[in-house]
Structures are given as structure tokens and as C-alpha cells.
Image 1 (cartoon, helix red, strand yellow):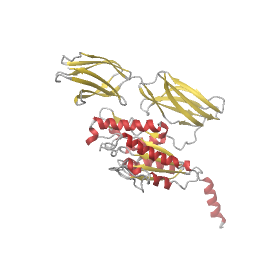
Image 2 (spheres, rainbow, N blue to C red):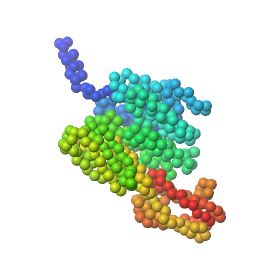
Image 3 (cartoon, rainbow, N blue to C red):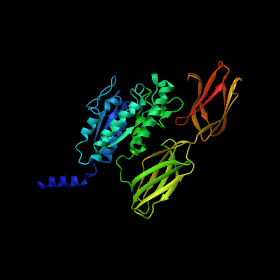
Image 4 (cartoon, one colour):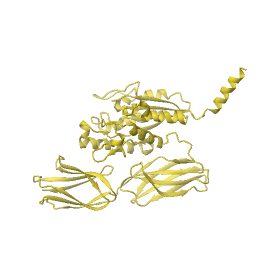
Length: 415
């Protein structure tokens, strides 16, 4: 009779997924800690843990080492000595602690660290020092043989963050993170989640405080982390590389894949916001087990182009990581600005838009002081903007047009 419980345990052990060997650590501040979500099970980190630990059974544990209000210096290695007037690392909530809780894995690569510092003290820190801290944290993780993903800045409003310069800075920090670490090692918590008119978090994702995401926002953050496929789950092919570049105004996409299913096909998709994708071309897998595929997008969108592969085989469909290719093509062209000097009550700007955009049109003094600003919808095709200028004193001015995902036009005129 004693053999029966032992036999049951053995059968249970055989049935348990052998892939339940990943461990995860998250360092950061309030977004990683779940602020804005209620109950906390709705936060992106807890959704991640629920999905990969209890549904897919591939994560052994997720360690959340996040504290509200913390900035990047708090996450630095314990050996780091900060410069004057900068906080030192928190030895219990930093990258050194993250590496420590992941250290016992037999395969270091089965450990993943997410770094999630959205905005705290970014008004005070220079972009250079923010990137220095993130690079140091990233290098500390990679040195241990773990995987590391840097999460971008996120939108924020209220107080100093209502100043145009601060709004632009958050966007620049987001871009700097993606440019430094690459799309493959970053997760974008910014684009597609804010209102271009005022840089606030979109209402459907906002908790209402101008800083944090709601339950719906955290759900979207989780979906973005999930789409990154950090565990490289059961891909129908082994995708060894997926790269893209802009040459002669065209996007050149290339991927190398090891494929054994003859029914596999690759569908190249493109998006302007990294969220809503359309299909460009379908490429059937070649007969070779290991092959390289090349596809050209002859007419990329102005500005940012996000590309991914939808990989289909007989039994399932899965997506690759997302690539960012920037096109130098302007989405909005200022064809004319008259009269200049502006000796009439109205200044007329003639524009051509490649697609529909939301944006902000401003008139600035030559020193950068805003004299007028208004939200504007730019419709695809030719259009005219009529701007009142009779209230302006004589002098030199700048017409500023911001649109899309941060693209801008600046043109001088006199009064």
C-alpha cells in the first residue's frame, strides 16, 4: 500500500511541465509596483506572473523589487558610488539584488530582468545620466548571463510635466532607450498610449492622476510584454535573426529562420503605432531547413515604421519581435507660408499631409515663448491653415507644427 502514494508522486512529476524553469525579477518604481491598478492582481507584473506561472507553467517565480517614487540611481549595482546630489542604490531593490535572487538557476539564460523606471526625477536628471544608469544596470544583468529588457519612459502630465520642454524630454528619453538597446531588448510603454495634443495618457488607459495607468492600461502593458515573447515560446520556426534598414528610401527587411514544417509561411506586417498592423507580403518557407529571406517595402510610411513577422504553420500562428525602421520622408510638408512679412490679419500655411495626423500648431517668439497654440487635425492631402497674427507686435517669429509621433516643422516669419 505504501507504494501507491509514491507511484502517484512519480506520475505527477512526469506530468508536470519540464519547462517550468524560468525566473523573473522586476526592478523599478510605481508602475512595476502596480500603482493605478486595483486590485493589484490587475497590474502588468501580476498579470505576467499569473499568465506564465499559473496558465503556461513556465515561470517558477517572479520577484517584484519595485518601489514607488524610485528613480534609476536606486537600481544601480550595490558597488556603485553616485555623484554628489544623487541617490545611492537600494541594496534590497536594485539590480544586484535582482541578480542574486536569480543566481541559483542552473541555466543563467533562463533568468529575465525587467527594468521599469518611467519618469521619476527625469525632470532633474540629464538624458545622458539616465542612459548611463540604464546601460550600467543592463550590463550588470547581461554579465551574469541573464536576459534583460529595458522598458521605456511613459507619458506624464501635471506640474512641471505640463511644460512643453518636459513633454519633449520624455519623448526623447523613450527614443534614446529604443535607439540604445534596440527594439529587441526594449518594451515600449509610451507610443500609442498618449494623446499627441497634450502628451497626456489616453483617457481609456489613465488612472486619472496624470502619471499612472488604470487597469485597462496595465492590461495593455502586459499585452506588450507578452508580445515580446521573452521566453521564445514554441515558435514554429527557430528565428535566428530579423533585421531591417532604410536604403534609398526603401525599407529592407531580412530574416534567417530554421524551418522544418513545409506548410510554414511568413507574413510581413507593418504598423505606424506598433499596435495596429497591416499585411504587406506573404513569403512561403523555402525547401531548405535553414534559409534567409529578404523583402523590400518600397513605400514606407513617413517617420516610424514598425515591422513584425506573423509566422504560420500547420498547427499554430505566432509573432516575431517588432522592428523599428525610421523613414526620413516627411509626413507633413509645409509648401507655403504667406504673407511674409505677415502684414495681413491672417497668416496662411499651405500643407500637404501623407495621412491623417493629430498635432499642435504654435506661434513662438524668437526666444521660444509661446504666443499662440492650438490643437489641429491634419487631413490627408492638401490643406490650408489660417492663423491670426494681428495681435502680434512687430518682430521675428517661428511657426511650429508638431504632429504624429513627434515629427515637427519649424519655419520663421516676420511681422
